[in-house]
Length: 392
Ligand SMILES: NC(=O)c1ccc[n+]([C@@H]2O[C@H](COP(=O)([O-])OP(=O)(O)OC[C@H]3O[C@@H](n4cnc5c(N)ncnc54)[C@H](O)[C@@H]3O)[C@@H](O)[C@H]2O)c1
Image (cartoon, rainbow, N blue to C red):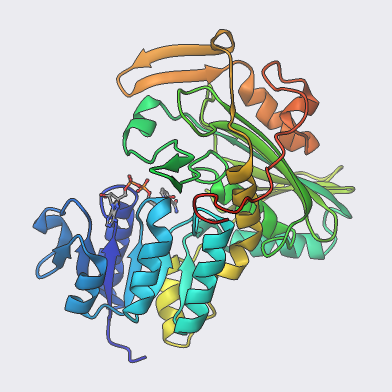
């Protein structure tokens, strides 16, 4: 590919797409890309899109009209596969937001479509573009914390009813008969799951049973307070416990427990902390490569793709288990502190901040920590049934 700016279309511009828009404008300043089109059901004001940028709500038609060589797909989860196919059919490379698809079967179809197109597809797990991930892997490989015993992830964020009111697919497991899987582990904390697996070599495959405990405090269909535990192919346990009903928002963290110390990755901050008995903690902050920049570099033959679809297969196994799991259990109103504020209804689950932290400490499920609202026994995923919406 020549060194001229790569013509790009952005699909899905109003939500998280706005940060892609800012990024495209920034990379355009460097001459790496040129925004040629914006695809959304609701047009952007011309001033935001930029001079001469085509707009439309039909991605295939817009790609034909603009000849865009790359598409950034930042639309709702259940639209990913059909729109990705449209882009690939038009000969456009992809930066596809996470989660890649809403089911395992769709993920297989996506990978097949990418492979047969010969085009590049980057999945938008930006935490996997951080050198912090490689730094943690190197510390582990160098024996800095001895033998790895397990990884425990913790995520405590505050999301109010407004978060779920912003879009019809928010907080849904299905919509109009198709899978959405917008749960805490599969969407807002998807990076926690994918990055935890990547730290210990399970990004492409997890092993054995996927233990899940899914709960909801908000009046939604999907989960907002959940934990999962899987094993790497080598047998290392990896747990991630998260809530969107925390008392306090904190940067999520992934703790790698070794028999001679621990490493904590704050994946939103690119920060790594190494703690060993008898030594002062050592903290380092690492650079992050923007995933669109990397995609362009890849198209120019300068760099391998940082997040190809196959490196999200371990995460997709977890997503599909969440999809097949029984509906989340409601957390009783008596175990929630509910307040109405300017940004909507806040629900804080009693003791959840401490429980999530303890889960990461012990690589444990909520039920193993005697959470008062956690039913005994994990919610086992149902086997995939023929005729399931989404086919998987
Ligand atoms: N990487 C991250 O940090 C991150 C953060 C937030 C969201 N996301 C992902 O980005 C995607 C979008 O999430 P969101 O929260 O911005 O959603 P949203 O619903 O807030 O916004 C989606 C946008 O897509 C548009 N849209 C919907 N259907 C469309 C279609 N068929 N064709 C064209 N446009 C369409 C909507 O009008 C809207 O502008 C999801 O996959 C989500 O998981 C990633």
